[in-house]
Amino acid sequence: MHFTRTVRVLFGTLTWLVLAFLYVPLIIVAVLSFNSVASLAWPPKGFTLHWWRLAAHSSGARDALMVSLKTAVGATAIALVLGLLAALAIHRFRFFGRESLNLMIVLPIALPGIVTGIALNAAFRQVGFAFGYLTLIIAHATFCIVVLYNNMLARFRRLSPNLEEASADLGAHTFQTFRYVTFPLLRTALLAGGLLAFGLSFDEIVVTTFAAGAGLETLPIWIFRNLSRGDQQPIVTVVATVVMVMSIIPVWIAQRLTSDDGPLTGGTR
Amino acid sequence: MLIFYVGSLASLFLTSLYRLNEDGSGIEKVIGLQNYKELAHNSVYLDITLRTLKIAVLVTLLDIVLALPIAFFMAKVVSPRFRRLLVAAVLVPLWASYLVKAFSWRAIIGSPGGVLDKTFGMSPNYGEIGLVIVLAYLWLPYMVVPIYAGLERLPDSLLDASSDLGAHFGFTFRKVVLPLLMPAIVAGSVFTFSLSLGDYIAVDLVGGNTQVIGSVVFDTFSADLPFAAAFAVVPVIIMVAYILGIRRTGALENL
Image (cartoon, rainbow over all chains, first blue to last red; front, side, top):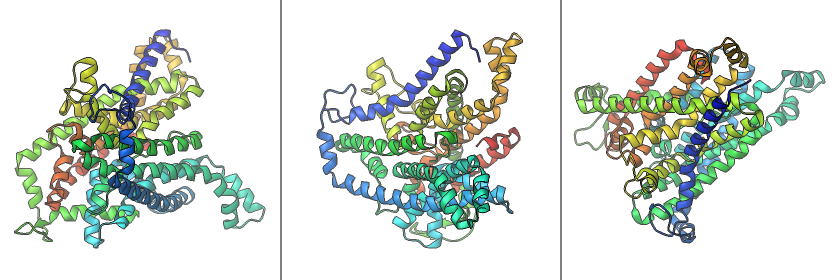
């Protein structure tokens, strides 16, 4: 397709501006974590690793990191199993209520996080669950499943049913076909979905606030609580940088694994 | 899991009908509409709802304006190789910590002493304008992705046909591209609108004293769960009405 030079240059420039708009704030946080002055003051005065050392020895931040990791691993594990099964069911079978089921699975991403959070909180109270790891992991799993589901469905749509039919024709029973044919084809999508779910769970804050109860503190909650405390500010920038890197790296890998499935969607707050 | 999620929404409605007991120490499970009456009678809550709606609309419009050129550039102008890279470049910040991004904007628009203030000598500072910019920043990828997907489905031949018939680019964009993109834009707006309606973290970090639905729900949640639940139902109603309203545009298939 042909565009005039003016159109190309104009749209190119706008694109670069928007990309800068997207990335500059991320870079600023990382830069501030090495700032030798203990505040959010700009421009940075000098380079120091002091805050990184302090953050590494901050027991509050370390405990929160462990909570975040455990939660993310638990929620991702649940989401891997249930997300795969849900996508398999929706893709493979035609059953009553299929369309509404499909709509309901994406519901958690269409409603604001605070609604999901307070709804889960109310539900846990009704059922009488004590707030803790269990409630936190269940809450995170609800939105992690959506990510897995979307990724798996995108992969299923790309897979040819011929392969499974061929396997069956050659005498494999259902389980063998799944084990030796379908699963290997799904592996990268599963891995990518798992990484995305992990990244998402790792930096989630809204649902966490409502589902964790008083005793548990994930890294984002720790950041949020310490933001207003001036003396903690530099350590917060360090932890923020860590959280950012921890959520971007898995996503970057996931993106490479599934670049043929179309853009990754189904994020949620 | 799904039953659990839908069950939670039901329990949200149920809780919103409860009330606090006399001394405010616990929740009395008596069904009544008093929380909704309070919401309807106290004009503060109407103001807050309208303000939240206004912010959500502004954020959505700003995101449409920002997303259109980058999505068009990605889908129609650049080479396929470069396109893959751009798609990744837009999507990666989407998954970067939302809290960290909002936090970063705190350092950027703060005045005096923030990055904008030091670099350009002016800054919106914390408040409604700053909040709209930050929310638009946070949700931008949610708008870019559906518009990009919509543009990918739009055949190049339509653009060529329009320009062969003598239309210049601006005309083609307005009369051919935009109408066909409407479902995709509306689909993106579901995200930007919904996310803006429920936010309280960015509001807390960069909103100054701005009060929105999310911040009220968050503030009242530990003291008066039934009331917070009732106010949380308001964005649900708005979103359901919005989704029903746009169903005809075919936008839901683009979600």
